[in-house]
Image (cartoon, rainbow, N blue to C red; front, side, top):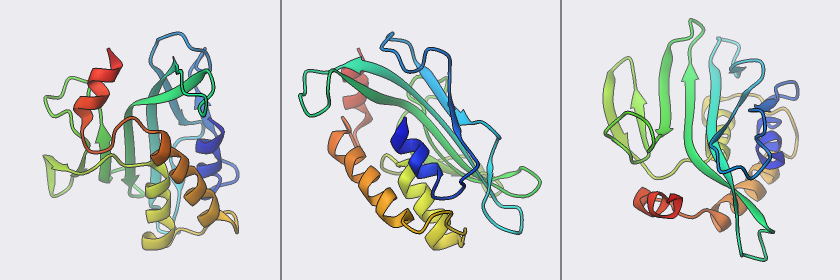
Amino acid sequence: MTPLQQDVSCLSVSDVLIVSPGGRNATGEIKAVTLAGGPILITDHGLQLDIGLQYDVIRTEDPDLGPYKVRTRAYDYALRDADDRTLVSYHWHPLGRSTYEAPHFHIPPTWPRIHFPCERTSLESIIRLCIQEIGAEAARDDWNEVLSLNEGKFKLYRSWNAEPELAKARAS
């Protein structure tokens, strides 16, 4: 989980990710990662970033990865206003109750039930959006290098990008 914590440290030095109990073991169970203190305040006007990820730890035969690999099973990144209303959220939840299983985003105040399709969204790209586009203050001088390195590793070792059917096939 170190790369994800490094990513979060680009926005906040005090916010930490917490892993569900047993979350560092290859148990075959889906585990969760969330922010220990709730959403990260990213602007003076009360804009917040909330992060939720689900994953499992699987054995891999790839010598570059080591004996185990963390595999994303779902994500939910949300930008919320000062009143905790979701303004935009990025989701992928193929194992949930929704019939829409591909990566997507929502714009709740305008079209709360519409799934806008998108490619798989990395945590690094959301944090970069917060800093470069929204104007969140970076919490570390090397934020761009940290996000670029971690996103590069994510892209190199991910099992799929725009075709979640690959993820479902590999999950079974």
